[in-house]
Every structure is written in structure tokens, then in C-alpha cells.
Length: 191
Image 1 (tube, rainbow, N blue to C red):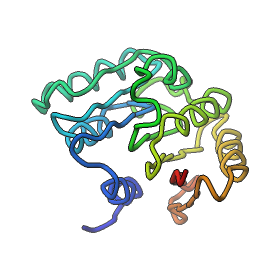
Image 2 (cartoon, helix red, strand yellow):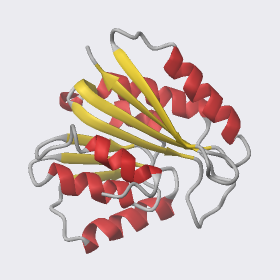
Image 3 (cartoon, one colour):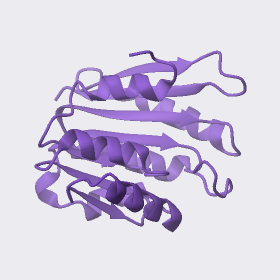
Image 4 (cartoon, rainbow, N blue to C red):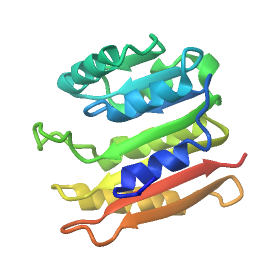
């Protein structure tokens, strides 16, 4: 596979832990592409939970999932990702294989509605509680919007404080992208 964008690379890494029957979370459903990818990978026996604060994003994602004729292995929540611990059934806490974040704004939408450091950091803390040992959190950071640089710095500072013996953090970025680089962080839970 040619890795012509950073999200292709992210999917290659996620495929290492996603399998039929997995539980996955799309913390920022946006246009629904990651949600569809996750639902395809976890299959009929798996579960995908998606979150977004924008009703348009939830509706677009629902339409994409239905167009793909995927099994009803997904549930979407019109709420912020910081609420995942409260709305995902407790029986799945500590059982999630993958959590995916795309930070920034919904492409083709209102660019004033953006992810924010405060809620993203709470969601990252929740993600680590939801994650199974061996699971991955994947964070794509698009910082080219007001407040984006601050969120980027806050997320990377949060990641740098995680215990090395419990969570490994790997960073990659598309360095030569005009404007702001697209940064990708993987958090692998070891224990």
C-alpha cells in the first residue's frame, strides 16, 4: 500500500489490533470515514461507538454507515467525546481495542466549531480507562485553526507525562505539508 497520506498510515497501524469482535470508539466522527472503517474491521460481532458535537456529523456518519450496508454494530452519540465514559456501557470499560481522534474541525463545515484542549484531554484520560491492555489510541492533530496550536501542545504535553511502563507514545508527522504539519500520535496501553 502506498502511504500517500497520514491517515493511510494510521489505518495500517490500527489493523494490527483491530479484528472481528473488537470494540472501537471514534471519538470525533466528523464525516464518518473512520467510523465506517472501524465498523468494517470489527464485523458483526464487534461494536463501534461514535461521538460528535455536531448533529450534521452524526447524520452524515449514520448515512455512510447505512449506505455501506454494514451490520448494525454501531451506535452514535450526539455529544462530546469527553462523555464517553458515561455513555458507553460499563461492561466495555477496559475492553476497547481502538480509540480514534481527529482533532480540529469538520471539513466542509463551520470552522468555528473545533475540538478544544480541555475536553480533548478529558476524553484522552477516559480513553485510557476504556482501553484494553494491548489497545491503541490514535490521535490525528490538525492545528491550522484558531486554538489548534494550543490543543496540539496540550495533547503532546499530556502524552509526555504518561508512565512509560504503562503506556508507550509514538509520534509521527507529515512534516512537508504546507501550513501546519499533520501530527499523529499513537498511545499503546501496556498494562
